Amino acid sequence: MTTRLETPPTIAAAPEVTRPALEAVQKQLGSVPNLHRVLASSPATLDAYLALGAALNKGALDPKTRDRLAITVAEVNGCDYCLSAHTFLGKNLRKLDDAELNANRDASSSDPKAQAALRFAAQVVKARGHVTDADVVAVKAAGFTQAQVLEIVAHTALNTLTNYVNTVAQTEIDFPVVTHHAR
Image (cartoon, rainbow, N blue to C red; front, side, top):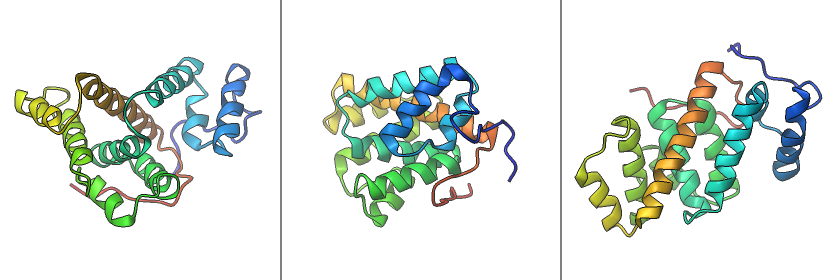
């Protein structure tokens, strides 16, 4: 597949103003994923993505839940780039097993509390935010506070942003490829 938007091949090829952010990503991750390079074409978009991600990483949701949410949202939105990236991260950094990762794609989990978050996030995407009272009651009944419900919505929005960027750009997948289920 040919990408629609330019992916600078190196940090040096990215706009100068974005290079420090890309260098920080490289230091943190050991590489600069193609998503970050695509976003580097717009300093404002790269900064917004990194700032929201950093803020949410300080929130109450644990890293496993955050990656599970990313997998669910990517599956619902049909974004193979994000599905591939977060399946890789979920397996290698979060130590989630294949059965759990596959379940997460369908907004399911072996952890009942995580499953409630995933189902809520999937509904937020499918309903474009127009969830029902029952949806909110269910996620809160699973033990999520109001602040955590808001974080689930924010993670859903952040992941939807990257899903849309990668789908529009047709970003080349630089992780082991995972393809969304045809719907």
